[in-house]
Length: 145
Image (cartoon, rainbow, N blue to C red; front, top):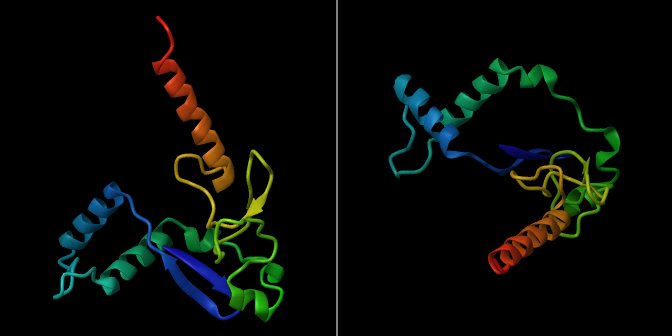
């Protein structure tokens, strides 16, 4: 789960999962005799939340976590706008997580930027890199023998 942290508190922003992790969750909840889905066929959030709270504690995330810098949201206006002070992204309107620096352009962005397959690149640099890779593949396909 990804949370936005502001002076107003924690707000769930996104639930990200991979098929393997989902299968592990379904198995663990089934073994415990707990429901995966509620009566309407929706994910049973109470069981889901409890499972992940237990996982976070078992993996030591609570001990290793660190607080965001006090100046991450320097004013109420910034917090209400959803933008984190220092985030240089032009690709999203709401920030979350922490600030990090793109390894290619050195731009400082928040966790709303980035991809799973190249987590060190901001969205702009990933698009440029992807376009170059696609062009290279196309050139290779059309190269004379």
